[in-house]
Length: 228
Length: 263
Image (cartoon, rainbow over all chains, first blue to last red; front, side, top):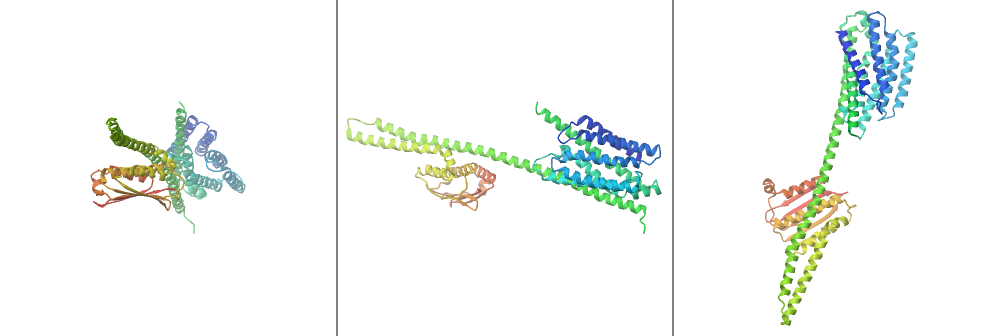
């Protein structure tokens, strides 16, 4: 069951990559390269992590620790393009980067290696993105212009990431406890459900983003056809 | 006391559910707010379009009214006067100097009357342009036009010295309201006295029109769908965010007061 959920999630990630490559064009609010890079790196990390754990029976934590700062930087690049329309993103980026990289460095040094997951840094990053998304919504509500949210690329990109980051923050905060419970009993029902829930949030993220790509594509088509 | 694994799982799920609810609430709130804002913008645009359409319609009605007055006056007054002049001059017998003199003088009087009527007509045709000089001037002109027909005694009072800068659209609507009321008085009221008052107080323009006619039962009129003119007036007043008060009783005249915000 967990495998099925994992492969479904990976499937949607693949769909997201295909849609981003085929539908997106470089735009004032679209960082096409960052989106494709992020989705591709996530895909490679997930597949590699799964292979390392399943076939080589090794600890794959180091992989996810290396993935974390890349994810942070790429997501910032993606969000900066979207949010810069509404507020000065640089301030958030500088403050957030300082806090995240400081805690990442400290956690890595304290652990001595990459074999322990930097769950606190991950929580910091997710909380930071949660705050950025909330501020985006605040400025989004304040604007005067009329936007159809069902067709807005930026809204769906931020919403997907907000639901993912805000709702999974608890799992990263309690990561060490979850690992302890898993070590005591691999077949623990709670761990089983947590894994499914995490994959569901991945699924929500990729669905929102895929829809965002389709909205952007439609917007491009309708604006180019209006010139005909 | 060590917390068991099961308890930790329960805590995690409870907190996650809380976060999920909070996140979903926020997203739905943003969606709902945006949708309401969009609906509001659409309603505002629709109202603006309706207002502009009504303005064009009112302009056309004022022009039509002017043309109606012009044609009826040409036919009824000036036409008759000139016909009479023609008949009078045709009946002049140069052999009877005394009678001829009287007839020529009568014909002169008729021609003078015709000239006076034509002057009044030309002023009427400038009625719409008079609106540019202000509502008071346009109403004065309309009143003078009615007063030439000595059947009606019209009293006009104006207290709009503190009226702010002209709002052309509102002036046109108010002028049209006045015209419609006067038309109704002529058609239905059987009145002999009309009282018109224009005043401005507390950022509101008040137009009061009273007559001593036979009055009418307004509820019955509206029920029988006869009060289309009244409904038109109500619609225009609503577009201006104003108010219309009508008081009428059988054999006791009618009083209508329009209150229009004017800033």
